[in-house]
Length: 294
Ligand code: ADP
Ligand code: ZN
Picture (cartoon, rainbow, N blue to C red):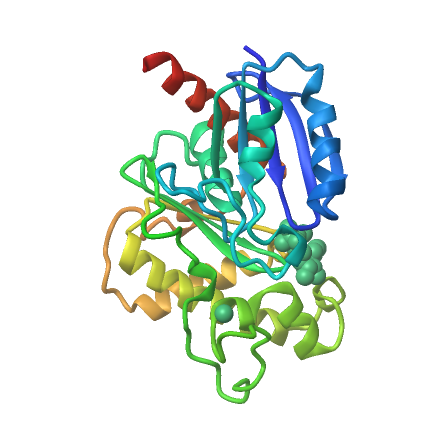
């Protein structure tokens, strides 16, 4: 089985070919500029690859509801060239094969659930902390879409005293993304997060915000495992800080075996950065199975 995978990001498009074991046979990366420039390059890549299905995990907001008239379109993105562009239609016009589509973070969540550390679990959250913050959520084995799809990166949290006016989110004075994504760290401390490794107060504050959000996620979604990925989480010192603060903030309210084993409950991504593209492979496989069962 040859499964095409497209991880459609705001800065780059990763195109790959995989198989049902999740193994990636080859992959390329194309810069995301405009649809007019970028889509033909993606289509050219897949053109001679003889793929049976294609899985797409796209930056958002994106319409992932199959019954919607704008299914497959990028919605209100600040990337104006992509606003209202139907990435799915562009690909369907080029290839008559089953296609599966989800959000980028749901793709990563699915990758971890199929091939990674969340294998065998059915309720999982994958949170990326990078240029933005987003969360893929699966409950009872199903990726959550709901009304649109979760935008859990923008949940409102309490600013730490003295840090009241540092949100970089244009919509929210105190949301997680505004206070804790990479650009927020950079603005607050005047240099990129990667240059702040030795500044303990940076990671104290960062872990506080992430722990606040994670406590809210645990209380709302009740995931069996929480996976943290994205550029900022390369700072591995964050993990013990986050785990400790989650326990403190939860204050004993939820008592489960998972919560008692934080090292295995809040974990880094396990697929060497391939969780997103491997999730796309799985989306392709699921689309193919669905087509066959109709
Ligand atoms: P994106 O979110 O755009 O897909 P990333 O997940 O790589 O991309 O996130 C980029 C953000 O992560 C930037 O704000 C960058 O400063 C930050 N970042 C990247 N690498 C590191 C690192 N090693 N340590 C801390 N922050 C990092
Ligand atoms: Zn926000």
